Amino acid sequence: MTDYRPASGSCARCRAALGTASLKRDGVWYCSPACAEGHPEPARTTAVPESRLYGVPRRFFRSRRPKELRGARSGA
Image (cartoon, rainbow, N blue to C red):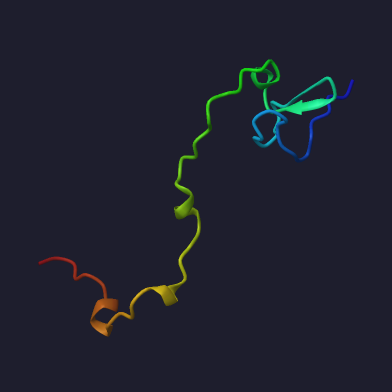
């Protein structure tokens, strides 16, 4: 017996991405059994804010003077 899962797509109810917990009921894909029963799961939050996922090119930072490039001196 083969258990089929979608490779891509979104839930018919909450529009969340389909994954390994997806369920097909009456020809429609849902992200989880709870969503298929009409009880969508609470909103999923990411561990990292989306703004931190993308790097900022160096051209957006001010130029540094040569003394700043050397780094902090160890010991004091």
